[in-house]
Amino acid sequence: MEGKAIRLRGLRKVFGRTEAVSDVDLAVSDGEFFSMLGPSGSGKTTVLRMIAGFETPTSGTVELDGQDVTALAPFERDVHTVFQDYALFPHMTVEQNVAYGLKIRKVPKADRLRRAAEALESVRLEGFAKRRPAQLSGGQRQRVALARALVTRPRVLLLDEPLGALDLKLREQMQIELKELQREVGITFVYVTHDQDEALTMSDRMAVFDNGRIEQTGTPAEIYERPATPFVAGFVGTSNLLTGESAEHVVGKAGTFSVRPEKIRVLKETSDGTGGADGAAAAPEPGHTAATGTVAEVVYLGDATRFLVDLDAGGRLTAVQQNLETSSEDVAAYRGSRVRLQWHERHNFPVTGAT
Amino acid sequence: MKLSRPARITLRVAAVLGFAVIYVPLLLVLVNSLNPDRSSSWPPPGVTFHWWADAWGSAGARHALVTSLKAGAGATGAALVLGTLVAFAVQRFRFFGREALSFAIVLPIALPGIVTGVALNTAFRTVLEPLGVGLGLFTVVVGHATFCVVVVYNNVIARLRRMPGSFEEAAMDLGANTFRAFTDVTFPLVRSALVAGGLLAFALSFDEIIVTTFTAGPDTQTLPIWIFSNMARPQQAPVVSVVAAVLVLLSVVPIYLAQRMSSDTASGSRI
Image (cartoon, rainbow over all chains, first blue to last red; front, side):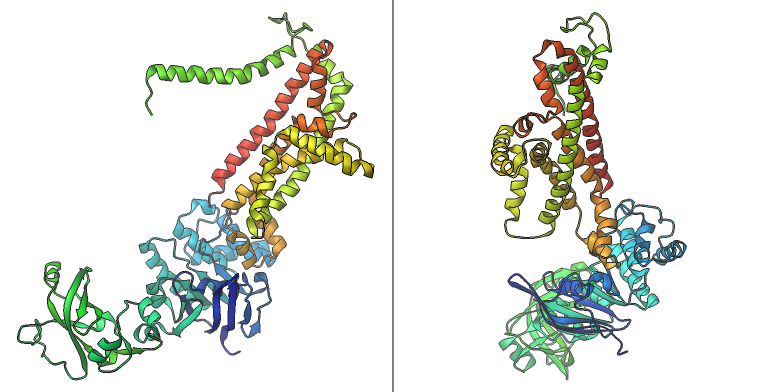
């Protein structure tokens, strides 16, 4: 076995006149937590549905475990899905819902109930077996959906924005639980989301989708630190691009460069041209890139402050500083003031495909 | 909302009057069926079950009842099959003329019965009669089915609209083939809508008279037609009252059940 749980080759899907997915090639390793990140309409859910078998690709193939399953129906694939709306059967109890996959596989009843109980235990829903889905909260339903999909131990679990309907607190808690659960069961997870934080925190690897194409595939760190295209730079994290003249002036090279806001230090510029509070020198330190500008807007975020700075060289950069000692009053004083931005050269990432 | 005292009283009187207009005559029918006086004099001189026994013994009434039950069952059966199929087609697939089809299905319930009746009568005579099929029970069933389909269709499509398609997908995802997904998930979820629609369809068919007049042959008499043709005969008046009373009771049951069923599922199938 090659260790590729899923392999997509040249996958395309056309709905009427719109091409929802174009030329997607993707390989997901066994036991990997793989995220597909992208805005709505970027084709990520369609790709997921083609892996599950709900949509037939216009062209291209889907392989599971090295076997071409493109022509197989959903019930012939060893893949289970956690739906965005959970799709729990309302006329069945929680237990019946969870045991349904086993019942279809003709597992004897006693065995079935035992395994359903275990699955419910693994998502901490013991004692809810006899309830109806309508009697559960959103978070509980979500767990039932997980238990139902995991009880038959599929090779691959597909999750379609499973946390989308939950409130923030619960979502953060479920992110951790999902990740733990995945490590425990060792099943390959393919996770569709439009939430970049979710993708960054949970994934082993991820693919960023836009307009039906994969813009970039890599580990969260690779994607965040070295966005390959302007779209990725903008969608994952805050967009901070230096383009055209301003790039040439500031970085000293032609092209488009991405800089992450938290890498930029904000120094108050003083009249004699030297740095402000921390006494930084006028000229950039060796190996650093510097730019001067005016603070257009300051946003106090609680744990950090965001500066929007209009550069003298043209363009605007966002910088984020941890509020080590700053308070909201200090922050307000920055508005309209002259500042000097400085960051290490290694944080300038050339971005291709920019206009 | 707060209402002034006179407004409250006026509204109450109006409501009572409204209900009285509907239900007092119905009650009168029941009373007359127990009135020993053949000409339904008032106040009734006593109570008798003589007419009920008479009606039970009346071959014409019994025959008409059986015909009505057959017509109702036939029309309901046809409506259940066709209405459900169309509802699934309209809800699940996108095809050319989908909206038009949906409209065409619902239209017959709004068409005046007399138009449907005349149209069907002409059609049956020109198409079926040369084939040797005369007007009779079969044509009545077809005539009733035209509007019975509507109530089944409306019930089923309302249920399907509230039901996300992902239920079936979830079943298939867990290993159920198309047939199992339908029997395990889809059917149980639309079952009560089918029962409610079927009961309403039966009730509609059971008391239909206009379309029946045009589609029934001379030998086919449904209960409403029998009542209509016997009403004018003073001899039969008490028996007609009995039959009418039975009809009222018979229509109340399915309507009551249908209403309970759809309100049950309205709260029970919240997802």
